[in-house]
Image 1: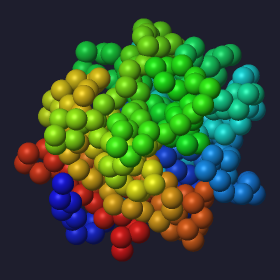
Image 2: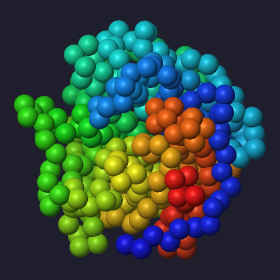
Image 3: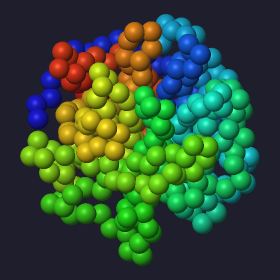
Length: 331
């Protein structure tokens, strides 16, 4: 599929005072809130397991003007030391609001070094958040993204390969010999699961999120546009837009479907590669405009574990296709 790269658009580094990444963005009470992971210099060598991404707390940011306004840091909202079942590595999180309560969903390695999903609760969107005593039963892997549909149902999308441990599971069960599919086999998919009414458990078994190519078949593992991590879901003109990172091809891509479970048909590239290995995002509408929130490693001189939050306006054409944005590695 042809990529029509737009001219470079105005962009903004949102919080130059600190290294943060993986932004999940939502609007609460007329204000835009950003829930990033919090990078730090841990001294751990780089490896394919991502041990050098050794984040240990979350801050919450907010603003009332995306491109020009003050970005308020509300301070530490949750830290590893507060979580009863914690091991290490507090990676990408997301949030949902229901009945006046705010539920923060986070991946964290337990004391056996296995990623699980936890939940922490607050009365305010900025926290602080009080964690539940145990992880969500049946949860695994990383990169929670929570979507509220128009009927009031909530869905979690999750999963990440390599350090995110998704390759260790088949049919929601751990396998003894983790492996990746061959290039001519269907790619490992993200997962989606409906949340329970109390927002603290899965209401069902997680299902695969299937991305189909133009031929109507699932994308193969050798396709440069296959899923790797960083699921996100948003809705535009009645269609469900599932977006994700492709990992080692360093793209943000998207696919469109007719319901939150899919299948989704591949549409194109949202963002070309940025400086740094990872690329991760969220998409949100605020005050009549759509924005792509993401990160890169330009301010840290390319240190892939020290990332900086960015935002750029996102546009659709008349058919609902997202116009591709040029990433910082393409300059």
